[in-house]
Length: 417
Image 1: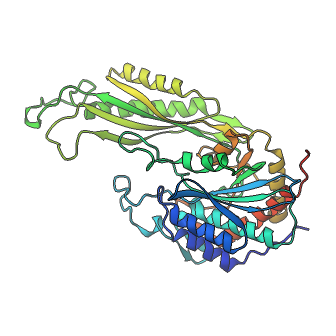
Image 2 (image 1 turned 180 degrees about the vertical axis):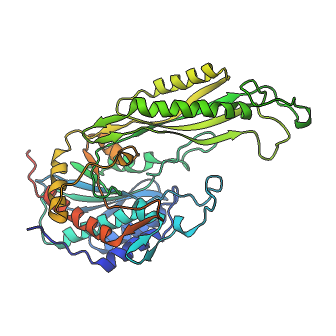
Image 3 (image 1 turned 90 degrees about the vertical axis):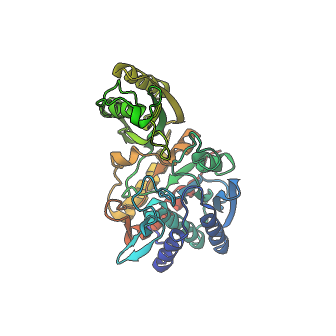
């Protein structure tokens, strides 16, 4: 008979809404971190800050075991995917769905609910339920709330520390004590599992033009790769880049035990000229590419392909690699997989499936754990992004129940010495 844990629905809902109504875009995680720290402490769970910076820290809580069992860490991130000043990428950066949350019938709504404070609330409530259950764990249960999961990266004048991401989040947490035998990264999967995720390599492809022309003096020419303006040349390159990107995904699709990766390429930004000085053509124009990667892929080989593409198009320029985060597949995750399967079966009367390809083709914080030899799996409630950033309350409550069950199942097992 499966154990039933005390997860008060009203308290879970209020916790999720409280977390999401503290706006925490990347770089502004401090206030929600203070909230999590205070909540854990008030509930009698020992907690501490682990941070590179005083205003961007991780929080780690511990429900201690007796010391002779396997340990588990729950991991969720506090930063959300929208930026308050992202006026270049969003039509309306200030709309409420990006910075707050509310109840909508049987659902909770808001970008933060689905990424990732809804699952964070479920983890916190699960840890509290385990603590109050009277069950004596053999291994420790850790619960972490981390900064810097959303992938903003230093480049050009957008410098560290303001634009740091992974270095200050889960990676820093692990390196400073957030270590367990296994990790469960709580994000939306529809209660499916994945233990491989895509890495990423970011490239700056800079196209060179000729000397600047004052606008009234420039030659009148159609668009071509020989145009004097670097912006026009970059426009000619985009079509070839998109064709290359389609072939890239086909060539490097990866099918492993932990999931399938379809690595995509995105032209995420373009910069050329000066908006405040448009009376002159531009000598340089840069395209910024996000190339997702698979395990053991060589980022320098990708760079060479991009250089070859420039050469083949007859467009002068250069290619710079400015971010590399490797893809990993978990090694020896079977014990955690088995715990998830048992508890999932008990709660849903079905076997958990492998996550959809779109899930394992993302970056999630399973990667720092797997990189450091801690087998990690992402597993969590269903969410809707395309239909208004919503999560069903029953999904959130189910997540708290299964997380508590997984913790008890795994952390009750004796770890051989």
